[in-house]
Length: 538
Figure (tube, helix red, strand yellow):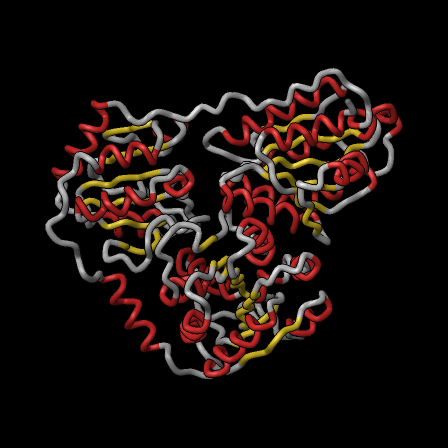
């Protein structure tokens, strides 16, 4: 069997159901094989970073591995920023790049480089088969590592001659899938006792709560213990319903403010995450001096940064279910929360304004969309407005970006639509972020994906202005200085015309009353559409 056919058979056997890529000459072995495997869709991107990001989101949405096909050294370089995002998100993506014929290695052929070394810093594992006999075992090993907690991207270089050669090594059966057991009886007993003893427990829920099936049991645990549940500042998943009375919002980005927020609790529970991604340095711990429980899917995270009172490495979903089964049923549930009340006050204050506020714009957008829409969110400074306007009551109703690199929302929507072909996908992005991956609009048009792209156009890098204000306050700089190179208004990007250039119709909206009709008209087309909403800046 040819090496390229072994590779394709291995993808199918190991649960890969989609390929995202930007084709090139050294990728011909894979591209030539696609006709023989019509069950494997290939989603085309105009630039490699788009493909890498779309695959990352697809893996998160399907809880399965995906494949990215990149083009040699420059193409791999283009994708590295999004590969960093995949690493931070724990996305089990197999990233491949075509490599020149190994027989030309010493001649330094066009576009060749050490691809394994390039990929290594932003992947869990990186390798290159030197013989067709290595393709099957290397593929299985790569996917095993990608799916082992904490999950993450892996890289495999694809030399043209190796993948075009014959091999008798064709065993592509996946490794035995090992799932962690539920926590032992002693650990669950201690978990329950600490929860019962606490008067005001606080729980911080990471993405692995959703990945490993613990979302429902987490709700029950919060209700049974009167706990407040927080989400990480940057995350991929909606780990707890944002309208639930027990929801406390998201964790901030500085140790002192995290500590101040969590100091209201006499027990802290960290579940399924790296905890915490800080932006600014603060002395001291992020956690108050109270008992700490940590439940993780991988041993390397149990003691990371903090020494827990009780550390558990076990299946998150099963352990939360077992714990919930030993907790008393609540006699009553809270009916409201300070967090939800603050959102309502914020909406009232921001209702009017010219240009319209992001708060009002997101309220009008949420009212106009079908209730089962899925939001891919890279609104950044407008995130509180998105969270206030939409009801994300279950996992896979909202997807966000990890790692802090921008441009993920517009590109990620391609992967989410591929994963949820029957659902309405709405990508919300700031104008600065959107321009990092605007070529994704072409992929939506090419694959006839009816995504609604919503661009919040404030003509600035608003988050940078906020961060410059914080920098000035922290480091004693001039507090009323200008914001250098942070405006995007000279010239302003015309997103409607940009969309048309990529094969998508667009609509400019500059009043809140026009949002509902514009959304209705866009959805009625059944095609991808872009809405450019003019909103107030800083």
